Each structure stands twice: as structure tokens, then as C-alpha cells.
Length: 312
Image 1 (cartoon, rainbow, N blue to C red):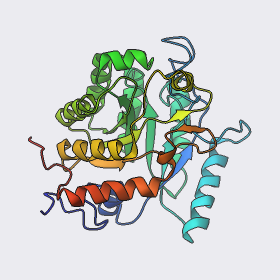
Image 2 (cartoon, helix red, strand yellow; image 1 turned 135 degrees about the horizontal axis):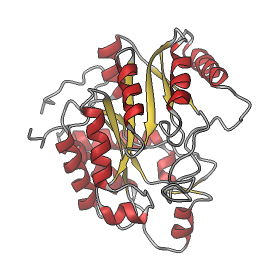
Image 3 (cartoon, rainbow, N blue to C red; image 1 turned 45 degrees about the vertical axis):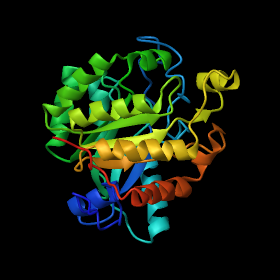
Image 4 (cartoon, rainbow, N blue to C red; image 1 turned 180 degrees about the vertical axis):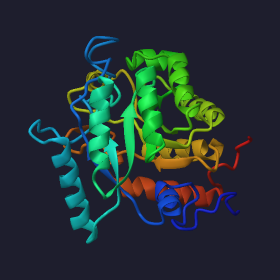
């Protein structure tokens, strides 16, 4: 069958970020990962402590406090340029922890600083849906008028028992309120989903995808749950409190989720990049190419594609 959406640039049956960027920007775009040293209301005690059970203290990799934001971005641009052999166009990606959880003047200074770099063509901000007060939303609206802005929100699951178990400290209703506040301002939003959370069945994961479909997000990131050394999740795994999906189970779940998602929703990630030095399980997730190839193969075997079961 032909996909209702033609992803010919990548020869994929789902709407890849690379395909989207080439259509929007006219060329390949790279992400420059940054860390501003922000914390999270689920870490500092204002809503909870310890973070989500899978949290490794933030997902960024700039751990040296001596590196300024400008130094980080310069280093990332240089790293990417060495890899591709030319000056890259980049999205400045504020990744670690909650990047709207700071005084608005601090946020303004950080975001404005990266926009002074000629290589930067946009900003992506990872945050929580319950960390979008009015003054921050106004700042984001102003940025959105000047650059290509994406706000990334960690949905993970729509199931309240799961959210409680993973210690997200943000209800689904709060999430929807924050999400809608961005949509009303025409800000591009990317939702994060995690498959394989403790206690969830494949049908529960599909229900998350169904409800995401109703939200019609601009983009989605999907990944397998990673058990990382030093986390609460690692203790639960060692105690045998839950089982992880096999690679085939993960691939099957993702394919079924893709069939439900709107064809125009960009799939910014379809498997994760866990820190191999800290990864406890599942070890199959460390072979990213095998997972990507498995998803492509399964889609072809079933002659299916993203959006096949989507109904507007």
C-alpha cells in the first residue's frame, strides 16, 4: 500500500524528523544539546523529591559547571561541523531537567544568547506542562514570533496509576491544561511517550497513543523505558517488581501506535539513546540500528504505515 503521506526522502513509512526538517528548512538540521543548570519541581521539593523513578538527574551531557551556555553551543557546533565537514544549521536544544523552571528574566537571557549564533535556526525547550506560568507563556509566544520554536513535554503515559507510580507529580489534567496553553498560542509542541512503564500492558500503551491522536500534536517522541544505574527504577528492577518488553514486543507496540497517529504528526524519535555506560536493561535497546531496522521491517511485512487507522 502507499502511505497516505509520502515520506519519500527517507523511504520510511512514518513521518520522520529528517523528512520534516528538509521540507521546512530545505536541508538537514542538527540538534545542539545544551544544559543551563536548571532543576525540576519534582526534584527540589516544591512538588516532589527524587524526580521520576527513571530520572538520572537530568538527561543532558554537559556536566561541567565551568562551561557557559555560549561555550556549550560553540562546542556542539564544532562537534557537528567536524562530523559532517561543513558548518551546520542547528536547533539549540535545552534538554536537561525543566527548562522553563526559572525566573523569566533568566530564561530570556538564555534563549536570547543562543539566538545570537548565526548557525542557530530554532530553539527546542524540554519542560513540564505544569511549569508554564503566564509570564513564561508570554516569553515563549514572543520567541515563537521570531524563531522556529518547539516546546517538548514529557507526557509518558495517560494513565493516572502509572503517573503516580513513576512519581511524575503532575496529573494528566494538569498536563492537558499546559499543553492547551501552548496550542492556543500556536506554539509547536512535541510530546514524549515511554513504552514499557511498570504495570502497563501493550493495550494501555495503545490507549496512550489513542488519546495523543485526539490531541493532534505537532510531533511525538517514542522510546523504550531504560533502566539506568542509580535510579529508583533500577532498585525496582533488581527486586523483580516489573518486567521489560522484549525487542519484538516493543517493535510491535510502536508499529501499532504509528498506525493510530495522525500522518502529519512528526515522529522525532522512535527509539531511545540510553547512556550505555549506565544502562542496566534492556540491553537490546543499545543497538539502535537494529531497533530502527526492525520497525521498518515490521511495517513492510504488514504493509502498513503511520496514520493507517487514523480517523480525524
